[in-house]
Image (cartoon, rainbow, N blue to C red; front, top):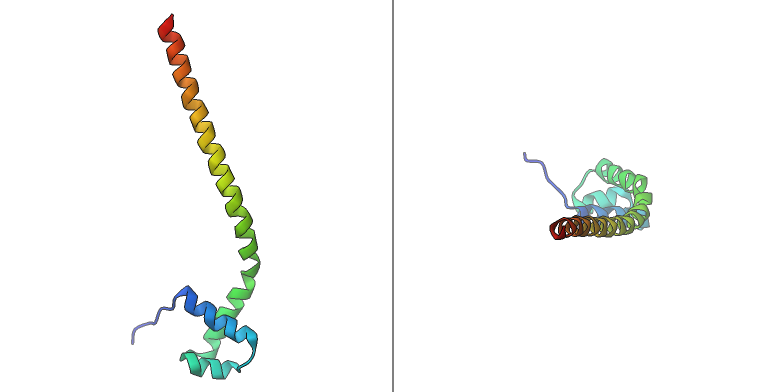
Length: 91
């Protein structure tokens, strides 16, 4: 028997439906052909990392600004090297 692999989108759909609590864990397990323990594990993982969703948004903005800063510093460094080269060429 081969091991099934589930996409993140699929897991999220199952977890969100379990969080709604409209169906029991056993009903969800039957509906999605999963073991109830698997749904519980996914739900626990989801809830444990839920806070990081908002942290990543802020970090990605910082990362973008940090990348922009690095790019600008690289450009400044390159221009400084070119200016120094031209100064030496004029002497």
